[in-house]
Length: 297
Image 1 (tube, helix red, strand yellow):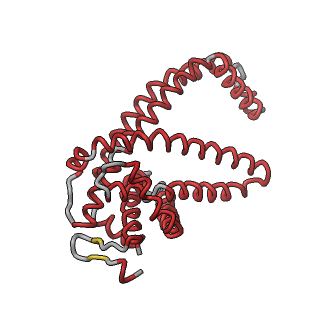
Image 2 (cartoon, helix red, strand yellow):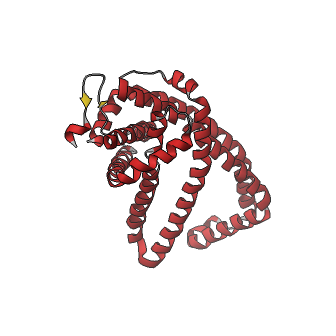
Image 3 (cartoon, one colour):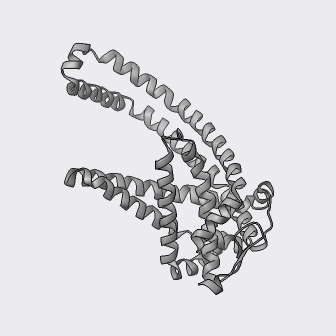
């Protein structure tokens, strides 16, 4: 029921998705331009190096394509070895840009959480700008913690999964790909689930202390963990299926919309799961229907 109710609430508040989409697009476009300006000289020097050092004729490339690819990869390796410090410094700058981009994208999470919590409990539609201003100090702290700590965790998980997938492909062949994808889905859903009740508890406590809210989140999390995990798994599979099924027919437009949609839905789902655990009534549409978990659970 929380899953179905969350979709209903999402569709009734879809204007919030478009506001978040505009914000994310602006941040991503600026970050992308900065990253290209940092890595552009590296790629230009790399291509110049390969063009000058690669002396194989077109006929030899046609006759020995594998050897030609090996030679190009060898030139790449030589370039990276000769310019290691220069490239590493550029990569450090790119990493900082990525972390800062994640920090900016995480900034609206607590304001959106406050808006949705208010919408579900009082049916009051608070403006995004007002929510951002009223929660700015706690949003900055929350965004800093999640962008740095969870960024490191996600990088470690991603690196571990790539290493495991590479080992499995060498061991059992390409059948390892679906296994690796299923494992990645399980691990990232588990990561989402472990923090799923943090934002609802922040809104519940009036954004006073995110660390106290984190402590309080463990009760509804672990006592209702199976339900939280199942709902998050199903919703993640649904969104991934939509992205994969629409990326070509819509030329990537729908997948772009899915990121802010998933963020708003994820926040809403966590609130409904929290209310479901505490048997708290909430609105599931624009002030027409009140859902009572006590009667139906």
